[in-house]
View 1: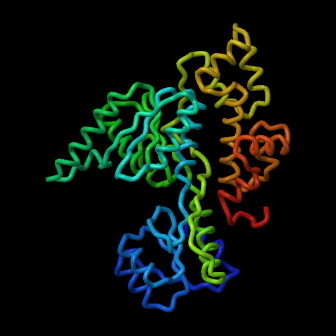
View 2 (view 1 turned 45 degrees about the vertical axis):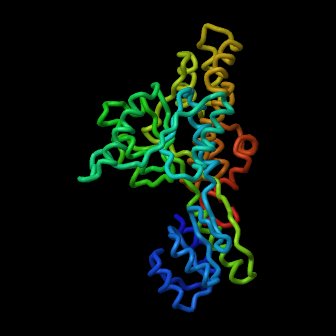
View 3 (view 1 turned 90 degrees about the vertical axis):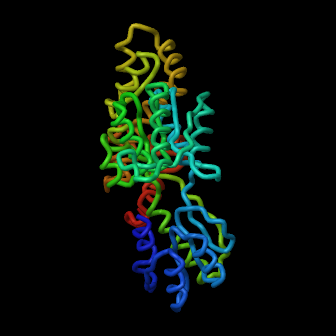
Length: 372
């Protein structure tokens, strides 16, 4: 997706030619022997960073943070990723939340955003510090990996159920799914799993298929190419741009709603299944034998949202999916998602997502019908 975004910026307007090599020190040295105007990089190590810094060549690094003042960076907004996960799980009624896995010595911004989003709802997070390793393939002579796997199993077994786990990546979520299978823990009924990156082959390999936060890979590639162009032509100084994620792509690993109150659980399930029905809220309330005020009080206590807010979240999730995955008009999307007209959809997007439907689509797919 990042390469697609780079191509969307470069073609057909700019006469750029591209040459490729690995991000290793050897690869960087080979590139620097050529008559280049700039570099777009990913997965640079410390040696590669040092070589580029010494060269003074305009460079933009995409995806991961670097400790460099002369190399520009286009990174994921990891705090926003964590906050998106917190909003997704709490709107489904989860009160037990967890994070896998915190590694290394640097502050994990995805966990920080997740934890902050949960604290705003009066909730806390069980986080595990671990070094992920696939449970089915412990390497011979690697007792540390076996110890880590046992640590993960003990942690998963001890978590209060049902629990929703945000994993630092799709690969980490795949590892957790395998541990759950071997432990006999049912996903998503006991543990709901959410990864990050929306790496479709990885998500499809898990059983059940993994829900994931879709990062704005194409947008990041587009912005990186645009920034490099400015650095090469206008001598724009290096800086850091953080790109927010697009949406949560829901699959089977989170295909459930949970609430301590059975009434709220029923309401959430009904809303999720009937989100496009304009009378969804009224139909549900009319079937109950208690007052609307009582239901709203229980609903807010369980989810932190009013019934109307939760219903709107489900409708907006479907609108995001249609805008990102199809070429349907905004008017058609509004109708499919239970909005009375395009203006109502636009108001909802601005209120909840702080952008218009068209802005969301351009963020998700920069190359989508330029000017749409």
